[in-house]
View 1 (tube, helix red, strand yellow):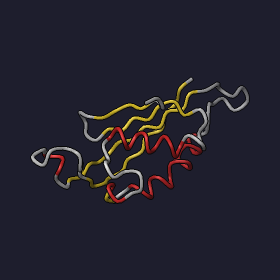
View 2 (view 1 turned 135 degrees about the horizontal axis):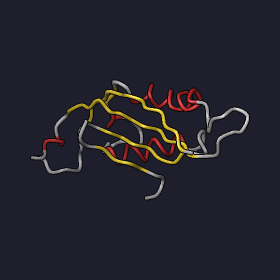
View 3 (view 1 turned 30 degrees about the vertical axis):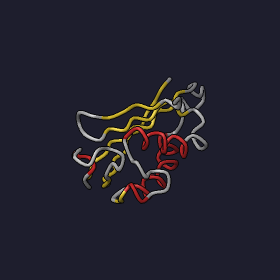
View 4 (view 1 turned 90 degrees about the horizontal axis):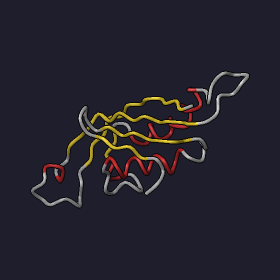
Length: 119
């Protein structure tokens, strides 16, 4: 069974590795939607895979690090594409959420990425 919890962060960044004339080379911001997916067996007694509160608890320190921040200044996010943000989140969440199966990072209504822990 797969479950997910959705989080929102607002953050600024620029992409330092794109050509100077690319619009994303300029400082700009996004209202990111982040989905944390966990896949595992349903506990026969509790009736769930994991308590949604446990997912929120694991994500909270990352939310505090990212929300209303300049992503380029965060260690490991010097090139904060959605793809790199998803991998960064995975690396920090996976120890607390061993059944982590997918991270979705949406930087707009129309654009985002899905990371399943494999490069």
